[in-house]
Image (cartoon, rainbow, N blue to C red):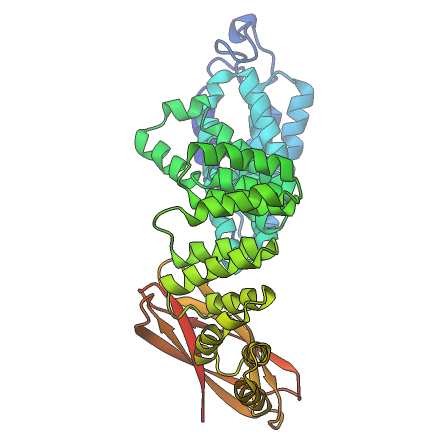
Length: 473
């Protein structure tokens, strides 16, 4: 059965605040009702009536039910009795409180929150135990959502998180997670709304009452929200808003290359090539650039059709990590597009050494040799293309945060029988070219000229600088 928050014991605590409520018909003397309503003083006293007792009994029966279906039946009865009690006496905070508890048992968190708010408005003292009910429900919903996040069922997870947010807003974790889920689902407005709510929460009175350890944990969870928010705005096509956010963050953190890269990429998207190029030039002069930084800068120049600068950036990446196959490929392509034929041969040689079944590498090698009048090298490259039984295409490395990497690509059959087994052994290297491990992947050849997609993962505690492969057998 579904856990239902231990509501009976919490209700008993709440009923301890009843005080001088009458025992039966609901008639209450003036001494039992405070004149202050809506947030100050004691408010209205709870009145226990036949209807509120019926609601309470139904809730207790639901807690003891043997099945979810039986429990829901009792909760339906509790809601009905509590609603009748509200109709009978709209200013009875106990009736609203019980309606909230019963609604929560039916997973009606919007209705439950509304009733709890009304109960607290009528009797501010209820805040002390209602916050416990709300937070307990929040925790249960958070836990229910977690497996869906882990399995990638973000839509279902979002439903649970939304309910958690409705029933309790005294913690920001759900707002943070919902923002990231909606960003993943590309529901941009909802993502921004939740990011803004989480960021605003840190300026609320709640934070001032929390211990420093909890607050620091929240701050750490929110550290990347401004950048995520800007990325969501950019993905939504709201470039002006995204640029404004990036400019503000970059001005506050002038040494943060991630911010500069994000801003430059958006400027390119907006067609502001001049400023984007200026920013990429500035980035190239920053100290301590890693191979990934050079690569990202190269992509920016490449997308801006500035191939001379992109070649320089990709060369920087291939220097920082000597076996970065992806950087070497893009270096060669940039040189080709800028017609720098005499500089291409050593780069294409490095490409082929790591990627021996790349048809594109041999074709660019042949083109550069032909442009420089090297007939022998041209012929050798063409023969190499003709001799390929399979080609390996679309390779892309994804470095993993704590070490290791994943490689995706496709294998196209040129001459083999369909279904033939092809063994690919990928070797992974440190930045200086030292091998750190390998993974072997078997791929079945498809129909002639048809590609078979593959993905392999290399698990390692060491960061991966580059990779290459060979075909066994």
